[in-house]
Image 1 (cartoon, rainbow, N blue to C red):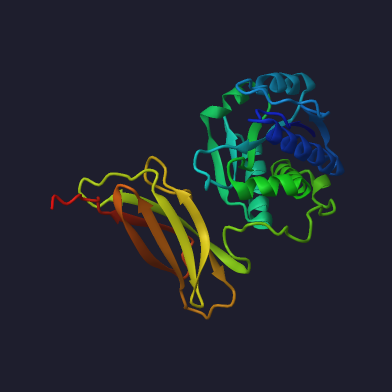
Image 2 (spheres, helix red, strand yellow; image 1 turned 60 degrees about the horizontal axis):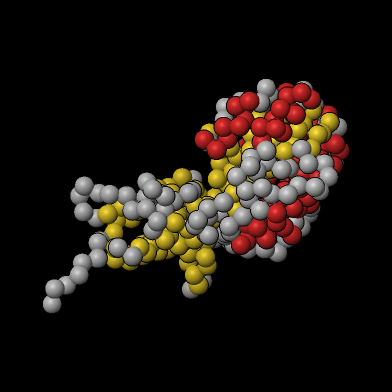
Length: 309
């Protein structure tokens, strides 16, 4: 199995380029332990980020000439919302290989580092992947613009690279039934680094909550760029679970709400959703989660009105 790792896909600055270079280098070593052939787009640290110059097509051509079986580009995402967070996978054209590898890698990153799993999507920014002759994907290992995501990627490249390599090996094993990777020694670190968590440790299960923020006046309009904060009410304390902004359609990314193993049966978890927007009155809503796996909550905001008095 020949894996091409693009550790210089399209870095936004020299600092991001250095993080991706180091992560790719370590990931290549981990994949070789699984018996795979690996080629790096940047085998030596000579990369200088050039804004606006995407090298992805050059790297894809190199992967095509090499005859790679999978093209995987590492990336640090960017957002004007500094609270945007999480790992995700992008493809131009889905395939069983990219679906399996993405799902496996994202699940490992989510469970082992508490990075939020933003899922697998077809994205316009993955257009260069159209030229790949093999299954190809971009894996976002966090947000450059999120302090905690970038700290994780910067301080723990070994953990990130091992988790992604394990996800690649297990995903391809499931698709192609190659048992050579199944019994490889687990390279994942047994301890988690001490960095910011989206939810407290000790959770047992997860409910995926999507918050939709709409105007209260009919016809209801989606409220974009509303600040949404979710707290868990536990033992008289409010524990931060999520902080972010709504998208153009008024929705948040799926928020992972934890169940805790120390709760009594049939005792629901309490969460407070706080929504703020400069054009609308603030609103707090309590919700209760017992055994739901997926939940949608609509929050209706009243517009601010200026008194003529």
